[in-house]
Image (cartoon, rainbow, N blue to C red; front, side, top):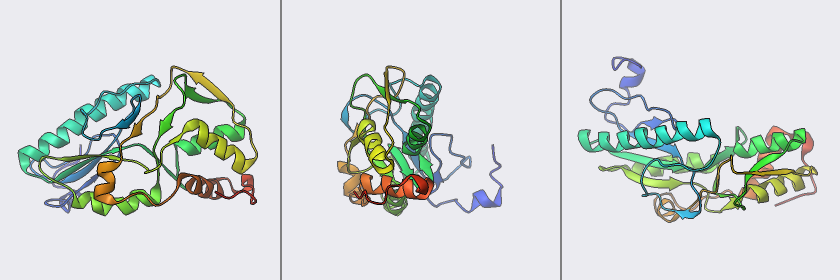
Length: 231
């Protein structure tokens, strides 16, 4: 735990703070504002951002249980801290981030390259809202501007929904490689979100997922990219 006397930490007093992913957000004992973003996995589409924090379904046991703890405890703690200390806060429930720097779709690209099977849930299709890193960066200032007491809770994902099956098929089209799927119950089910409130705060996302995936392949595995394929 970092000391509240840390000069790097002190610069965040009375200002919104960006906390990383689903781990604990470091905070001084008395006051700090922050954006809190969370992973969320659940079955079905149209998940509302203001649903109860935590409560994640699906497989991948270690990931699932750690995220249940992080989402429920840390997200709830951020909301309680906002109320207790009067610190404007946003809890942004992150869906599937990706981009040139990586992400879950990049993992699928590497599995595709290695000829290994890609896990998908038996309850097909596995729908999500992938959001490109450019849209994450563009949305941050608007999320900070939406901070409130009690905390503003909002989904954070791409305006377009896409399934793992569809995006792996697109990765296959971009690279000429054939995806092999392995249906199982021990993986994450769909988490297709309602982006209505997010779009009211930040506007719709600007990078279509097909274009974003093409850019990701060009950045990470340019030797695989078929130049003739365009979104």
